[in-house]
Structures are given as C-alpha cells and as structure tokens.
Amino acid sequence: MTEKDQEIYLDYASSTPLAKEVVAEMEAAMKNRSFGNPSTTEHLFGKQADDLIKNARLEVASIINAFPDEIIWTSGATEANNLAILGLSRFKSTDAKRQIISSFSEHKSVIDTCKKLESDGMELLLLSPNANGSIDINELEKAICDSTFLVSLMHINNEVGSINDIKLIGHICRKNNIFLHVDAAQGIGKLAVDVRDCNIDLMSLSAHKIYGPKGIGALFIDKESVGRIDPIFSGGGQERALRPGTLATHQIVGMARAYRIAKDNMSENYNHLRACRKVFLDNCKMLKGIQINSNSEQTFPGILSISAKGLHAESIIYDMRTIAVSRGSACTSDNDEPSHVLKAMGLAHDWINGTIRFSFGRDTSLEEVQFASKLYSNSVNRLNRLRGRK
Image 1: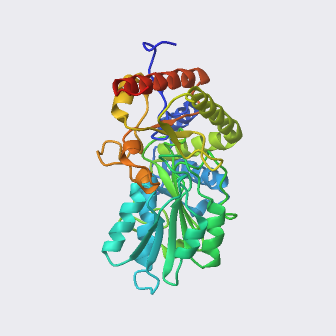
Image 2 (image 1 turned 90 degrees about the vertical axis):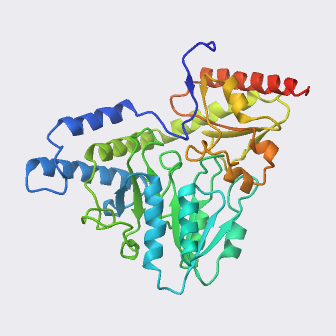
Image 3 (image 1 turned 90 degrees about the horizontal axis):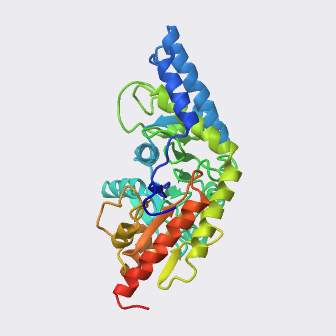
C-alpha cells in the first residue's frame, strides 16, 4: 500500500458507511407498496408501512431488552438527548427537585441542553471526569443531594473512548430514586446493554454510528417514565404524542437492520477493533512526546485518541492526508476552541492542540491500520525534527 492508494477511512466515531444489507432493506421499503403514511392504516399502503415500523421497533427494543412501545423514533441521538432532558425537566418544572447532574465530558447536545435549563432556573452540577475520561463513582455519589432528579451521562465517550459503568451508575440512581438518562450513541451495538439490568430510565440511540442511515435515531423511555416526559414541540399524535411528525419508514427499517447486524456480530467486531488498536499502538511504541488519552480496560478499543506534545493536529493530518481522521467530536471539530473533553480530563493546551482521534470500524483492515500508524509516526518524527527535537 502506498500514499497514492485510495484514502483510508479511520473516522468511524464520526459516522459509518451504510451496510449493504441496510441499503437493500431501505430500497425495498421505498420500492414496495410501503411508501404510504404509517399513521394511515385504513388502506394497504399505510398498513404495510406501519407493519414495517412495528417490526423495526421490536427489533431495536430486543437489542436492549426493552418493550417495543418504549422505543420513540427521533431524527437522531441529538434530538433524543433533547427530548429526554428537556421533556423530563418540563414535567418536573413545578417539582421541588431541581438539580441535574451531568459531566464536563458529555456531548454538546447534553451539556448545552443542561446549561439552557440552568439559565431557566434549574440547578446544574457538572462532574469532572478522571484521567481516563470516565466518571468517578464516588464523586457521583457525593454529588447527589435531596434536590437531584436526573443524572445524564454517556456510555462511551465519543472523543477518547472511555466507558462509564452505567450498571453501577444505574444502581446508584435507582437507590436514590433518581432518573438516569444514558447517551448511548457510541455504545449500542458495540457493547451489550440491558436497560432492565442497568436500571436505565431513558437512553438515546443513533443509527449512523452503527452502519445505519443518518437522520434517524430513537429514545428509549421506560414504561414507568413515559407519563413523566413532556413533548418538546407540537404537532400530531405520533410516537405516543411525544414526537410528532410523519415517520420515515425507510430510515427506520434501515436502523433496525443495522442494529440486528451489530447484535449478531458484536463479539467478533469487538475483537477485531482490539486487534486494530493493538497494531496501531505497537507501531507507535518508539514515538517520543505522545500520550494515549484513555488507555485502560475501561476504554472502547474502536476509539483511539493520541496527543503529540507541542505539535498541531492540523499539521499531522495534512501529512497524513490519505487518512481520514479528525481532531475530535464531529460536532465540534470545525471549532477552534480546544476540546472540552480533553480540558475536563486535565490535559494542558500543548497536548490538546496535538490531539488526533483515530476510530476503527468492522471494515478496517489490519493492513490499513499498519499503514496509517506508520504515516502518523513518520509525521510526528518529521515535525519534531523541524522543532529541533531528537
């Protein structure tokens, strides 16, 4: 493999290509007589669309051990996060319990939503992650008080891959009679999650992070919590009157198919990602002035965040221009502000500025990883030499 070869995609945490089976499922939904409005079941066209959506709801629910009617379709995880946090907060607006606990390392759709509620009078406590990027359970327990009604934390961090112990967090929340919302956009289909076993009340899901289509996601709402969520915008009565709007049948069946494939191949895919990570890190062992951000057993192997001290990520990315990578979250990588996640983890600016996120997928070959890691090593060594480092 040479630098003139086809570009290598190592940005799977930003988005994934559609699986061919997903494309086929979506095409069938659009070509067959299922193009009707699924809310109009008086005729065959609407009935067929409705049947496809019911089956998809069952499929997605089965992966997380939920009931089908606990799955509320959304446009993606960002909307699901908003519906979970805003919807519950609006319901609780006259309640004495006013505090939300989240963290500085959450996705912007969680942090910004929580800050909006804080400006409206809610109490907000943001926890700092530990050096690995995950939440310290003892710190969470200390933070809970009589006014806490919601804890909102992610499963897998989208920038560094750190994994929160959502089962233990769920136990703590249930013990204290607090709602738990989990942003599982990066986790579902990659790590097994049982919403019953983990005592999760609300969980945000995404399709395009797991080889499904963009523009579709879902919010799991536990059956005991459905009546405690207010809709965040108005319209028809779709999705138990929580999320109005005509459902996109083809996207929904695509999401369900993607989840089914991920569930069937979860163990195999995980082992492959571990192998990719090992190959990359083995090739970087001799590099000086780098550090791995989140590199423990509690790190998802498909996300690899590497910082090169004193260098600029843009320069490294330019050197590796045949490799598709990013500086961090796709939602903030075009922003000149330093990564809020890395800042929360305590990294200094001269480390943050040189940070690149490599993220692997099931289509990534070990040969591609080998090639990318060598390009990265060559770039870091070259740039260090230019700075007078040996």
